[in-house]
Image 1 (cartoon, rainbow, N blue to C red):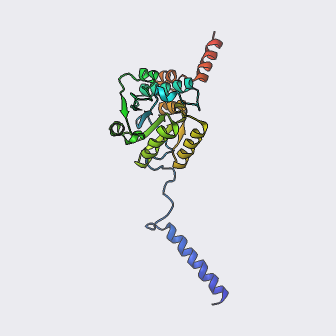
Image 2 (cartoon, rainbow, N blue to C red):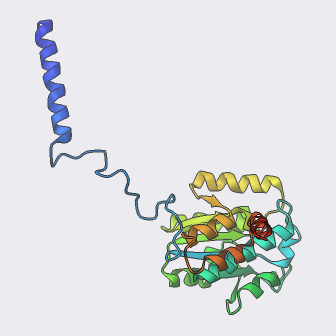
Length: 242
């Protein structure tokens, strides 16, 4: 075949292939709308209508071993998140592993913030493996599960991974969780990243579920979260207005 004929045949073949790619009825690898996220996509913002808060093993005995975050700060953060969730009408599931044993009861600050919310006692290490915990989450009908736990790499990470495998959209609240060494913290964060599970902080999660500062509940949510820098801004505003 002459060179001219070969080039002509090649151009014709490319033209046919290009036409087929855009012809109706011909499958294309590119979605019609790249801006539409699949259901349960992990980059979707938290919705107060689709979120349930799971608090795992915030127990007195376990708190004594926490080394990666200041204990007062950890208590402040998990209690603030629990209060904000309650204000926003977010269902809260609280569970403790063998609270009558060496790990002790749930910290009193947390139970005081959630009156009427039972603490589900369990023996399973992974909270999702406990039928009572699973039933409590499933009963809400919600798919976005905000998780905090002590320890981070076990009590928060294990249920997050199995919830994701079950079709849920889990997020782990880093500063409302704690663990027993920096190495454990690093290991937990790496495992979550590998599994594609987002990590957030307690205040971001709270305002993400609030969505709007014009919401009638906004003032109470910010009071619940009690963010130190926000308190300072408020004090400055009040002093400058005098």
